[in-house]
Picture 1 (tube, helix red, strand yellow):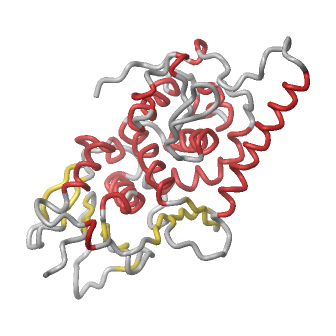
Picture 2: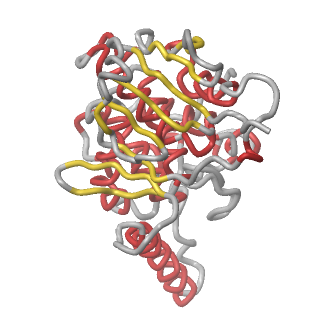
Picture 3: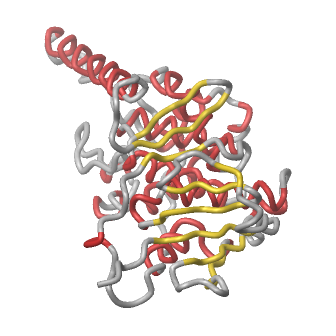
Length: 325
């Protein structure tokens, strides 16, 4: 899809600018109070996922001894944002900035409402040249539009996350992005392959009614692979399988030619596959000598008596199959 380049940072007005001073002071104070409560609400809602109370389905990324949780919907959107940076050959820092921005703007949920005419993951405004509502509500488009502008910010790689995000967004609360940096860094590191075996999801079994009775059971996964990673990651049927397994070659990703090479590229694809598993009916992912499955939500070592380690750069993905009548 051809996208229209979003306006450069200097052309973007403050998307959250307070009402003009000629309005009554009481109105301005009220607005600021509501906005502050909203910012705090984002943090409170996210932190509730960190509690020890049981959660039926959720995903987690671990870094520096701490685990950061997201809902399956948030994890799905995080996967897109992170691998979109990978697809462009951008550093993991870009993914961290993108994730921190979306966490602050929408809680990583593709919402169709916001301040004034703001919509989508990044709360972009049609009236400010980001595109039509329909375009912005497409997470692929809105993510691409965000990175289009970020790439014009000279030296963003060395900037503080909140400064880089603010340069793109021009928010009325420029310091708000900083609170999401640790969580975003952990997820970006996992989804760009720098932290192997650090991203997991606790998911319920795939319901029998959700499995297509006819056709290629891997088609939904393959469509999502192309949408998020393009031609850089190719999926082919796994020889000897029952049609429910594909092997993904990550060697075409820009990551494969950067530091970390094929191993990093493979782990980026593998952990992306786990983060999107709820939407694609993936039941197991294998990379190197490790395996994640819905039955065992950790990255367990492969049993060498059952399956040999997978070659560098390859990821094996298993999807749910129809039950026998």
